[in-house]
Every structure is written in C-alpha cells, then in structure tokens.
Length: 353
Image 1 (cartoon, rainbow, N blue to C red):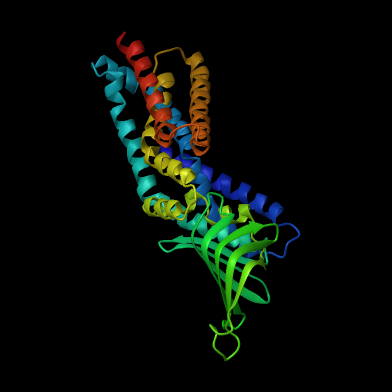
Image 2: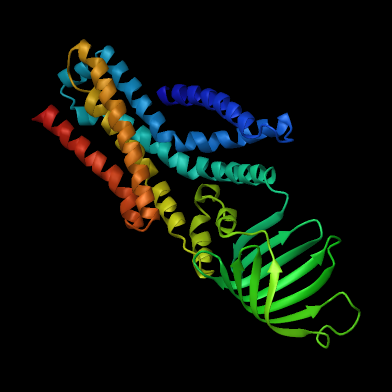
C-alpha cells in the first residue's frame, strides 16, 4: 500500500514537471500541443523506473514508522519474534517488486523510451539518418531532400568513425537505385566519408553497370553524420528490453563497437531486486530501533540521507563501470551486497547484542 501511494504521488508530480520542461524545451519550435503531451506520456515510465530506489526509500519509512506507531513491532518483540524475522515480509515484497520491475516493466519502459527518443530527435533534425546493428554487420542510412544513401559495413572501429568492407547504395526520392559503391575502408571526416580502394557502378543508365564501372584510389561522399550521432543512434541501453540485451551486445561487439555500457546496464538490471531489498534494510536500520518519539525525525532524516547516498553510490559505480575502472559485475553487485551486509550487521548488533 505504501508503494502504491508513493508511486502514484510521484507519477502526478513527474507528469506536471515533465510537461513544463517539454514546453520550455520546444519553445519556439513548431511542435503541436498533442505531440508534447505524447512525449511527456512516453517519458514518464522511464523516469519513474529510474526513481524506483528513491520511491522504495520513502516506502520503507512509511511502513516502519506506521508499525512503530501502532506498537506492532513492540508486540512482536514481546512475543519473542526477532526484528530479522519481522523483516521477512517487507524484504520479500521488495524483491517481488524488483523482479516484476525487471521482468514486466523493463520491456515496457524500453519500448516507450525508444519511441520517445525517435519522436524527440525528429523535431531537432531534418536530415534522415539511422544506425542499426544486425548479424550481417553495421547498417547506416543518411539522406536529405535529394537522395537516400544506405551504407553497409562488415565491422567498424570502437567509435564508429572507420568502417571496413563497405558497400554503399544510393537511391533517388522515388526509391530507384542510382549507383552502388564498394570500398575497402570508409573513414568519417568533418562533413564527409573518405573511401579508399573504391569501385563505383552507375545504375541509372540502361547499359552494363560492370562495363561502366569506375575504380578509384580515393573518393569522398558528403554526410551529416558525426561520431556522436552514430553512438546516439544506437539508443540508450534503457531503450533495449532486458531479454534482447545479450543478443544486442553480441552483435555490437561483433561489429567492432564497445558494448561496455550495455553490459554494465544489463548487470545493473539483474541486481535491481537485490538493490531494492538493500534500501528496505537501510530503512529498517533506523526506523525499527526502539527510541523516544522526539528522535523519530532524526531517524527519518538518517534513513533518507543513507538511502539517497546508496542511490548515488550506485550511480557512481555505474559510471566507473562504464569507464572501465570497475568490472561490470562489481559495479552492479557491490553496492547492494555491501548495504545489506552493513545493515544486517547493525541489526544483529542492536537487536541481539
């Protein structure tokens, strides 16, 4: 009940704040009011999912303070039930919420986040350009009001600025192929692709394309793509359902890109149920204790501070993992395991001596 109450309050608050932020963001742009509402609705699930640990902090405070006010914890102790046994229900509930969040909510958030990124990016760029990874390699599409170009590469370097075994297909606006270009490598420069060892087949004429083919040592093709745009086109790891992440990571590494950020996110999602349980343990440490009523505010403040501290420690560990300064498993699992261990040690010391 506490979780439903808090998540409902946060939903209303995020809707209002996100709506105001999107109005400010798209001020001066020709974006319909209905599109802004659609963007807000698509972005709310991802925001709530990201704030789930903070919601669990408030839920644990509400739960344990209500138990303390009703003297249920005192009665449980008087009946010989230890504090650790009293925590079984809240911990199982938090684990269940975490598992449902990963199994059910994560694919929903991934779908809405992907739609949000696609819709939002369409308002800031008139150029058509997409990047995708498949089992056959890397595919890029760029275009403008004159032509569309599809680029296929067997693999690429880590930042996507150099492609290997490149095939380029150009189409006019009616969808008719106009030329095909093959190159050994394609390097992304400022405003163009620099192709080496190139062979070009014209497809517009009715003659023999092979007979009209032209071979060149070097060739340049204009492009609006940048290294940052290529990375952003993959989408954030949150826009990929957790069940599809292992296959996507394999394709990303096969194409030559670094998948460290996606591997860290995958481990973070797997550790989410345990992390929510650790947040509940922190709430229990400060609110289950016996004490005077005038110390309740201090215990609540300590719970909030330690809960938020654990949340930011988790985010900091994620950044270290993405930068390669921590192994992926360590970055994801050390914060919840450490929080549970410290909370358990403190409860055992205060309750059982």
